[in-house]
Length: 564
Image (tube, rainbow, N blue to C red; front, side, top):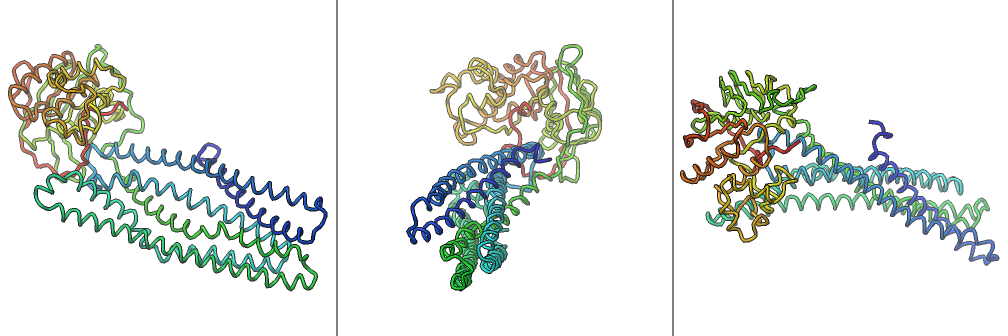
C-alpha cells in the first residue's frame, strides 16, 4: 500500500521529520551558543550579537516544541499501528479458536496478543525513528563541521561512522541470544502466573503450591537475566559511542587549535567546532538500544507470524454466497448427507457418515454417548470446521457462506460457554448489546433462572466472578442458554443444555426453553433422554467414535457466536 493511502506511514514519516528537526535545533542551539559566548568575550557592540541572541531563543524554543510535537505524532502513529495489528491478530485467533489452538497455551496467547504486539510497535517508535533522526543529524553536522574546518569534518565523519556501526553491532552481537529469548520467556512467565492463579485452590489443597511458585519464580528469573543482559550490552554499545564522541571532540580541538594559530580558522569559531560533535552524537548514542529493540521486535514479529500465518480450519470462500432468508418466511431448511468431520491434527474423523434432515421450525434432538461426535456436529453447523459430504442451509452448501454471515443466522449454546468476570447483565449483552434490562430478565426466565435472579441482592448488576466462580455449573449453563435465546437467531444449536442439572430442574428448564423456541429451527444435542414434547423427534448417533485430544483455550466456544 502506498504511503499516500496509509495514514500511519504518513504519521511515522512526519514523526521522523519532526524528530530530526528537533535534533537539528539542538545542534544549531549548541553551535550558536558557542559562537555567542566566544563573540561576547570580545565585547563588541550589542547590536552585533542580536542575531545570535535571537537565534538562541528561536532554537531553544523550537527544540522543545518540535520534540513535543514529534512525540505526539509518532506515538499517535504507533498506537494506531498497534490497534490495527492487535485487531488483526485477534481476528485471526477468532478464526482459529473454535477448532482449538493446541500450539499455544492461553497465557502464551495473552503474551503474544499484548506484549508481542507492543514489541513490534516499538520497532518503529524506538528503532526506525531514532535511526532516521541520527542519520539526518549526522549528515548535517558533518556538512557544518566541514564548512567550518574540513579536517575537523573528516574526523567527525569517521567518528560518527565508527559509533553508528560499532556500537549497535557490539550491543546486538553480545545480546543476540537474550533478544531472541525475551519474547518466549515473557510468554512462559505469563502462562505460569496464569496457571498458578487459576489453580491456586487446587495447588494449595494438593500441597504443591510452593513447587508451582518456584517454577514461576524460575521463569521470572530467566526473563530478568535476559533483560539484564540486554541492558548491560546496551550500555556497552553506548560506551563505545562515548569513546567515539571523546575522539571526535579531541580531534576537533587537535585540528582546530593549529588552524586558529595558522589563521585559517577564526578563533571565535573554535568553540563551535568543539561543540558540534556533542550535539551530533546525541541521537547516535541511542542507536545501540534501537538496534536491540529492533532485534526484540523481530522475535516478537516471528511469534505473531506463527498466529497470522496459521492455516484456518475452515477458510471462508473467496466469493461467498450472501445468505438469504427462507423464501417461505421461516427458518432455513437444513440437509445433511454422509457428513464426515475431522478435527485439525486428528487422524480419524470424529463424525462419520451422518445423515439428518431438519424442516423449517422443527426441533430435533441428536442423542448419543460421549465421543460419538455430537459436539463435532455443533462445531460443523457453526462453520468452525471443514467437512466432507453435504451440509446445506436453504439449499446452499454451508461451505459457500461467509462464516460471520452464517453465525448471524445460527446461534450456539455450548456446554463449556465462558462466563466473564463482570456483571450478569454484561455477560448477557454479549449476545445483544442493545438489549434492555427487561429483555435480559425475560431471557433468564426462559432459561429457568427467574427465582435465582430474584434472589440476587444486586439483580442484573451482580458480578459473576472470575470464570463464573460465583455461580454453579448448572447456573453457568443456563446463563449461556439465556444468552443464546437473547441473540434470537433463526437456527439454534443447543449443546447439552441440561448438563449439571438434576432431572426435575432439567425438565423445567427444557420445557420453558422449548416454549421460547417455538417456530425456530432447533437442534438439541444431548446424551440423555429428553422430556416428552420438548422436541419433535430424536436422531441417534452411534459410537463412540475415537476423537483426538484437543487442548483448546478456556473460551474456545462462547454461548453464542459473536454477531460478525
